[in-house]
Image (cartoon, rainbow, N blue to C red; front, side):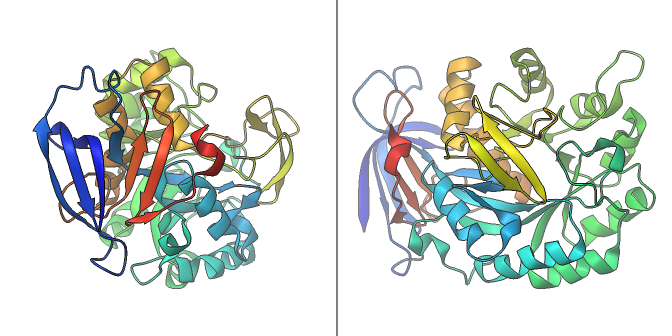
Length: 385
């Protein structure tokens, strides 16, 4: 058993006390108990006690540490290790729009890493909960940084990929032929559907939500924007969505637009949309079939198009608190709990007895002091600095 003491964020608020948990293999890496006295959020950052929050959950991860999910091989393990070192204890490996053969290469590498029997946390990496299929069922007119291999929904292709490794989340453009009609059946089959890389109208967005789509992929980016006479996909999200992803790197979305989304969408949650350039020096990296360039903190195609990010979830948390002024409880939910709820995962994203011991320990400046993935310590290396 391992015991940590400090200010612990529970679903009911902070308590000052102790959290006890088992390592994987001697209690399935779960929290055994939390004891302590309730304390107000105000002042939590003013004393010397560690701040203990749920491990971060990122449903949109393309790469990190110089590796891209689409490479296959051991790339996903290296990606998961890099992000675990920044507090992400669970993630969805996110693929790019690509030919089917490229997708199969990535899926075959991901297959042994996904699911309850896989044990990546033993190696100090984030748990890969499954795959986020970002395309290929998107609009070729709104690719963003996606390679030009978009195509309409193909159930045979989707099912064949899902047979290799579990798809938890699908980004699609509902206005594309067959995509809208497929949403209800996909939801009934257990897939979570997000709207993204879309030239669809406000009405298309509302219709897709009514058919069961659950959210929006990197809100504001690669979708029709808001105008007061043509509200677009952004308008549909702001008016009707319960959940949506957003990239809070202070580059993809203006701070004013972030504030709008925070007021409009109750369970807006953070993703990194991270690339192989995350955690790496400036230079050229792979993003699917694209070469991207990291420079001045951003990642772009040669034509200047933003192409994912170098964001990590610990920095996302700090941005929410320090740049947007969110209190720590609200910010923590947006980097962990809401994503867990969105995926229907009940034993992650919260610190309660019986939940997975996915735990992040922070200092008063919200820098990492320690990370535990399913009860096992993670090497945070330079992430703490």
